[in-house]
Image 1 (tube, rainbow, N blue to C red):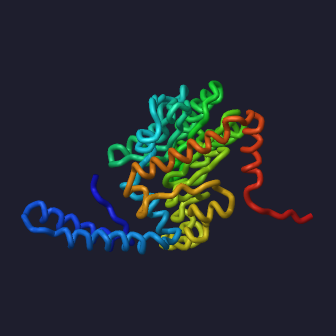
Image 2 (cartoon, rainbow, N blue to C red):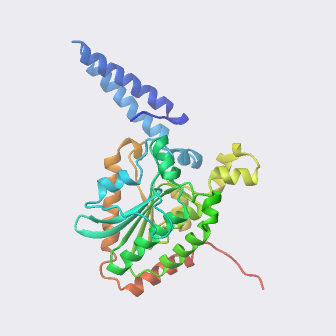
Image 3 (cartoon, helix red, strand yellow):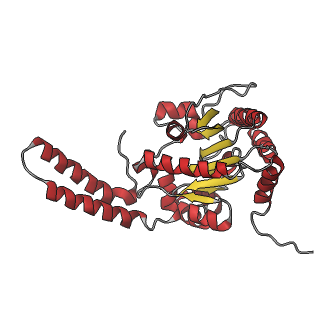
Length: 320
């Protein structure tokens, strides 16, 4: 996979390039470069900590969109066994921006619903850049109803800039499809665990994330609107995206503080794209822990807890 770097990552990329060149020289000659290699490796670790220890919200948004960041299918392959993808909404067509089907996590049977981006131009066109159409949400609902019927916990993996806003999506009632999902998810008798792995954009994300537990990766974001969209509305200029990201309070730590998410999943230093397996193991461990917490709970309690969770979000005051 081609290496990509964000602007604030360039000092680290330069060091890693130096390391690759020295290692190559060491292999191509009989000279001993072990001292130089250790020195650069130490410098790389130090630079990693300096670069990633104090990222601002806009930098975290950029990291959540990193081209080398693992996507939903990458996690599904590493976390779940026996995943069987099911297709179609039984009404219009199959939407590749949402994938889903039954699977197991160790011995626990579950239903996985996930938003999927493309890794290249061809795949992005197929996946619609991770922006689901209404048929994607209807497919997700079909699978969630199946899970509810057979008593399978639902694992929802969120990674979308938002639902697709095109004319066709509006003609096929994308807002209605999302609204129906919100209503139906609120009443499912099985536990729902949602994990925001990258972008969590607006109703497009919420359409599969009305969950008992909402988890988020350390460098992901979850927001009512993208920073660029917010900047275009409030400042009439997308150049103010960093200001918007700060004001929206959309990064993991701010979301946890405000009660929008329940738990932050740590990423390797530098982000999930630097170690897919380590990140997958962290997610799997937390999913299993959360599933165990629902083992003895009755369906009425599961529904009530989910309702109460969303009912208390936000603060407001009524003046009479």
